[in-house]
Image 1 (tube, helix red, strand yellow):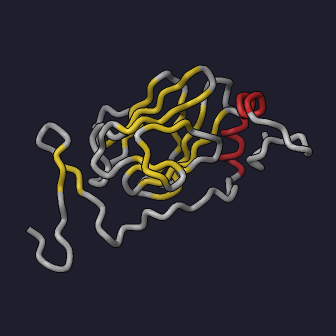
Image 2 (image 1 turned 30 degrees about the vertical axis):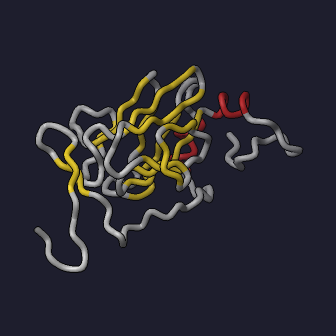
Length: 168
């Protein structure tokens, strides 16, 4: 047992494995996406076919990684068989699922210990919008939908671009 100002709690999420909870000093603040994409990231997003999306890891042990969402169900967690493997003790083995319905995507928390956050709010489930920040354990990821789907679904402002400022 850790002795000191804070005791670390562990939760068990199957197979004798444990997930560490965030401490009081953990940074869970929401940082809105400000559009700082690299040329490679912009090209990857622009090339997304209809019905797909991309998750970009902004911070965490695998910062810079990209995950293509092109199936009806994508699993995220610390389990080695997860589609999105996030190897950190703050992530549950089966942390969340991202489901696709035609051209929209929803994230569903799988009763994880530390929760799933979308744009700074803890959620059980939430529809993902273009540029949304997803927080799973120490990982901050941004969600980007195919430009074809974004333009078809988003209301147009006077400039002819979707309101996100992330035109194709």
